[in-house]
Length: 290
Image (cartoon, rainbow, N blue to C red; front, side):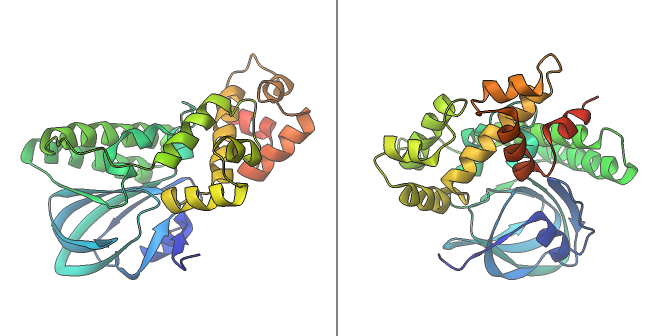
């Protein structure tokens, strides 16, 4: 263990002095308290929009004085801390878990398609006027949706996060020069990800994946956690849970059929697994979509 703390969404809510949302995402609009001068990781992704002023951000061995208007993207595994650089600072941040974003899509690896979320360093993008206007509008919509308590708040916020990801990707491609150097990444995680994508419907055991990658379960889990901030076992569980959620949204399938499709020995084992990972039963989860 490297001794680096991992902040939950609840911990972020305390850091930014906002109420704990008890959700899988957190929106903060802050200029007074976005400072934590000890390195930490997070359980969530983050997109920060610097509207006014400057903030000093540190990730790994690199630091930036980030001037407004800028976008900062952070994956969970990025070790970061930040300090105040100017008295005038206005910053909006949306924190979100990958499972929340992909709840209806069953692709837990969606965000790994984007360079600005999978590297070990944070990405800082100074915004030009046309993108500044669009990004500003999206963050305004997130803030208004949360403030008004819309019945479809979660779905709307999810859609706005997708819009941010696509807008940032387009901007990143336009303003980041192509280089002939090999693409950065983690070969072991890429192999694990492919293996998991091909087998998670039938295989939930960590041993299966470790054996195919010629590692012990402990070694595989530790290596994947170091690279992504999440252990191999957690990736397996989260991938199965995400597929279960998508299947449960299909009312033509019984819970027993969902259990069978995911290769659980029986419905009770599936129910226990689902409750352990979500805090609710499959039937309770299904009621959310009535």
